[in-house]
Length: 439
Ligand SMILES: Nc1ncnc2c1ncn2[C@@H]1O[C@H](COP(=O)(O)OP(=O)(O)OP(=O)(O)O)[C@@H](O)[C@H]1O
Image (cartoon, rainbow, N blue to C red; front, side):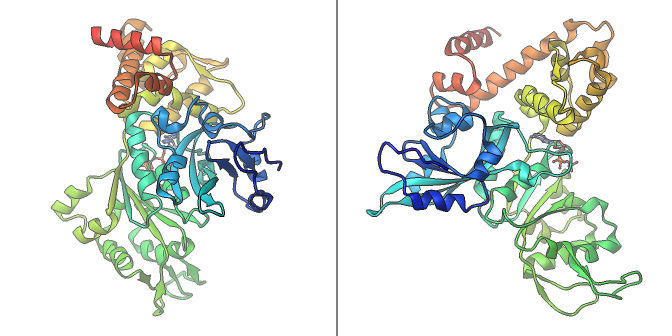
């Protein structure tokens, strides 16, 4: 690793060699956002043919011409300068794998006079936490960013998080993101599908059991709470836990202790709890099918996960990312009519359904362009009959309109910054705003 000399102070070789000892990707920045050193792990995870040394962090990671906060995003470097302490954020970065959310932890380093001179930036790509066939989450629509803002706020704390959202909205990915951006990131992330657990198994799966605790327990087995020690326990479909089991979970959360089935020994749990549900838990509490005390325990910090129809502006980005994931060796794209058709579809199954639709379409398509003919019938709906764009031609316009309206509602900076954020020129933005006003 060869540091570039900074405009200000010379980089301490000790600092540079320290970074090299770290196994996670790290870079060193100066106060002017310049990357002055990058370790081997960084180059392995994010390296491209072009060296990053001497370039600005916002240009390398975001391709922005100016710092993130001036482009309408939160900048951990500015925040750390103000707070004087470590800052954590989630940012969508350009990586060799495409765009991906990266958990950033930025620590200020002071010089002999106590002045912040450098920043050590640790980057954990979300793909470190991805499951089989998965991949990190993408999205930049306002509703999605709002959710990420909540994720960034709660991740460093120990508070129990409840993710509420329809099926297929990406709740498990959000749970992984919370884990990856938390101080527990280096420890296990253990996901439990509560709907798939029969009542008889729930306790022994969660808490483990001793040998001979019940018929078939031929060996002692540690439970999932133990497997997640030091890390995060993700309870998916928490609303499906039967009432009888809810009290056992409550006891664990209230006392922080548990017993293996067949044992009297009290064990200490060291978990951070993230739960998810697509059910209306509050209503379930009202009708008596979910315990109120448990509801308050798991719901310290609720995060609504938006359905795809509320983040339609993300459709093109999601399509590109998911196509790359379902068919990594092909360079599949969507024709405009096909994208229009998807934009007009309601996607009750959200991102999971979009992924399935694209996977099926990729199998139907021999070339590199997915067209209307390759899309499944439920997506084509009524409009498929004459394959006419007429019924669907509004789709893309609707998509763009909504994206622009969402962006306008959220953006409080200058028009110029907004244009930059949307990746269009200022002139194009003005033209589009004019069109919008005309309806
Ligand atoms: N923002 C996103 N970016 C990329 N892929 C996503 C995103 N959100 C969801 N996915 C993909 O969609 C699928 C469903 O995601 P996930 O399992 O996290 O949803 P869920 O809300 O937990 O669903 P369920 O409620 O049914 O358990 C996965 O394949 C996931 O990789």
